[in-house]
Length: 144
Image (cartoon, rainbow, N blue to C red; front, side, top):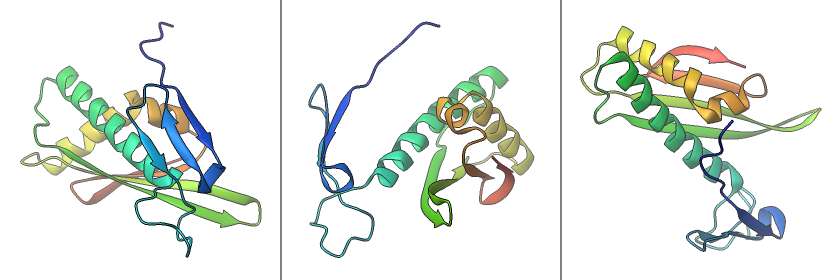
C-alpha cells in the first residue's frame, strides 16, 4: 500500500477543547453537541465527520462516474451524522443523500452504490455503523 497523504491533528480538551491541524490550516474550538454553555462558533466531532465523509464520498462519486464514463456534474452530497446512545454506550449513524441533477433514478442509485464501494470513509465504517444511502432523495440501501 502506498500512502498518498497523511493528515495530522492535535486536540486538547476532548469534546470541549481545541482542534488544530499540524499545518495550521484548520483551527477550531469544540463543544459537545447541544451543550447549553457552548460558545458561538464551536463545532463538534460529528459535524467534522459529516463534512469529511461528504467530501470523501463526493470524490468517490466523481471517480465512479469516470469509471462508468458518465457525468455526475453538479452532484451534491448531503451527510447527516447522528450521535446515538443506548444501553451499550454511544455510537454514530450516517445518512448520505446524493443529488445528481439530470440523472435517471436507477442510474443515480447505481452510481451512488458504486461510489460507496470505493469511498475510503465507506470502507473504514463498513460493518461498524449504520449507513443509509439515498440517491435523489430516494433511499436505495442501508448498510452496516
